[in-house]
Image 1 (cartoon, rainbow, N blue to C red):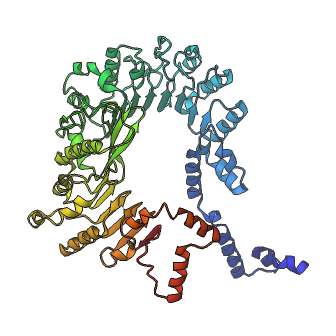
Image 2 (tube, helix red, strand yellow):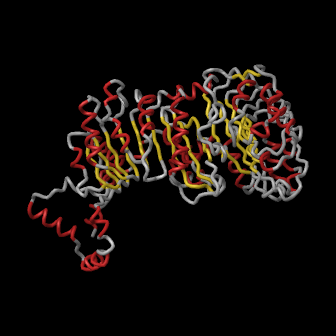
Length: 602
């Protein structure tokens, strides 16, 4: 028994029995231990960085990963206690003992406070904690958790008294106001003057979500990041439109020389009607690097850029969810209302930076009560440049998509095709309504004419690609070659003709521009033998995912064979199993011609 126990001991323990221990054997033992526990050999800097990423992925209201790390082992505990910045995030709804532990272990680092505001007053010790450590507070986050702004607890003076003092180190302030209950008359919500510059002398980041009212009260002139969420005005107006407009204009003017990132969210088309009163070409945000505009409609954006000048290099992005963006006459799309005009420098930069375009026709949305077209634009790094949702008004509201909705989709795509700013698109995705009527020939012709020089990848979903294949048989291609850079094709949830596709691939090879990659996702075909073998020697890479070949005869007899299939499954053997066994016995099976559910080759 002792010999067995001796053999099962760790290698390092057996080495310790020898006296003296050869250094070579000790190095081998250490190497073995490192292979068993690779995380033990990570440098402290990398391990600390992993801890920070892990902490950021957890919500402070669910668990405390800092305490978990400190309990794993002595090494991790020493590392966690030595890195004071790991303990700098404190929630004032914790118990006082836990808050004292985090405050002591993070000292003298700057603190990040989260003050969730519920329907009860904050304890006095939480207010005293802020007063005694006001010099260490760098960030404050105040989310209101009440159901309505009309709750009388909103007027509780706890937070007002807490913030009515000077924060010499506060750089970031984030406040999320409660929602408005339109059934109750609103109270007069006023942002008290404690948000003044003398209280926050170094404030650089300000975020106000669901802002209930906005007077020109922000006197800071050092803001580098400003996020104003004005969606509350769409639900229930509390302050006059003039004060909202003048408040936004005032804060932009006072921070015009320092503002680097600006985010405006809300129904600015209606609530910004006094925008016309702003002086033109008077406000210049000379340091602005990022501008994000999110609104219900976008027809106010040209007017905004006439009054607010931004650098040419500003990275502009936009998001719009317009339920009535397309009128019943979809041919009458007005430039500047459907999409900002190209003469605006930052808009032109956004268009020229677009490398991927996605057009998707969505099912009727309950909130919009109409089908919608979803348009996404991304840059080279897959960062979203614009996200537009345009409704297609119909009467009565449909229950499913139809070819009439496809017509609206083609008109929207044509608007983008006519815009020279999108000429550098490399990746295009089109999702239609799965109508049996194919797309018009001019759609694929125009795509090749306007974007074919740089277009490398084309994805078609629920759209008949026949017109695309027929386009390459037209003699006009000899004069105006199309899709010069196309290398990848992807087909999703559609029916495809293998013969047409093969002719298309042959034509591309003859022209010296072969397709390098093919991808099929849930594709139907009338040819039962359709599979990887069809593309050997034509395409470098083929991927087939969840595709079921269907034949006409098979469809007719499918219902009649259901009972036979159930009997065969009960016996544990099907025709496919028998065929597979025969192929193995003969050694001449046609496995390459059969298309499995998921297959690929390179």
